[in-house]
Image 1 (cartoon, rainbow, N blue to C red):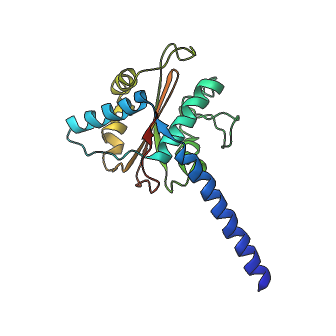
Image 2 (cartoon, rainbow, N blue to C red):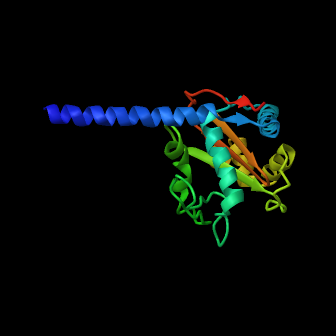
Length: 198
């Protein structure tokens, strides 16, 4: 009995430390002016279509920012892998996301894997023809225009087609150099919203 209690205590302490570690990462998350502009443009676009506001999520923004940087630095989106892919150069499960969607769970589970967000996440991503240029950052206007011009991405933003029954309760924004990434979630983020970077 004492042994079981001891193991449970260790598990509880480990879980608490993991949660505190994740929370400390979340407090470091902030949105640049460009990222905040992207959030505002998506919000206005949805409002113009009669759709509700989606609360900004600190945890989904963390995932978006980490992934945008991974895409620029490590380029997992090569050799038949698209921009939902993750490299093997981080504290996450790597995957090559192919057009047949066989690795969809690898992408959907990233919020759970990297944060305390207790649900799946759904990502849209965009890059420009100068996405490899370290001196170039994709603008919020360019990113949203790219998604508007792509029916599958536009459908996620506007809850159309296969997404029409979804209710987005959280959104995360990440822009790094030539890559823009947005995550949508069904569950409200209990950690709150990120601030604007100073």
